[in-house]
Amino acid sequence: MYSSSVPCPMCEAAAYWAGIERMYHGSDIADRGAPQLRRC
Image: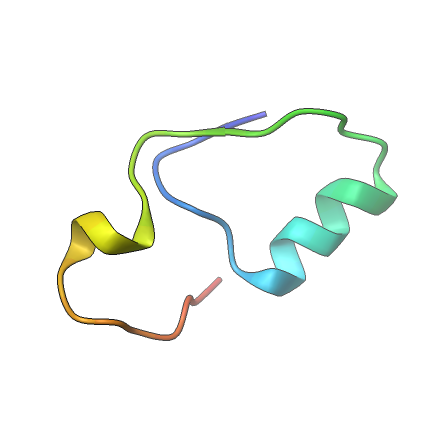
């Protein structure tokens, strides 16, 4: 699965239960500046 950013915990769990073995993301939380809660 490809994503523009790190998925939120709920989306990450849904991908796990869907059987998705690998996830690739374009940016990390640190790339977005100040720490924030990840949203769906």
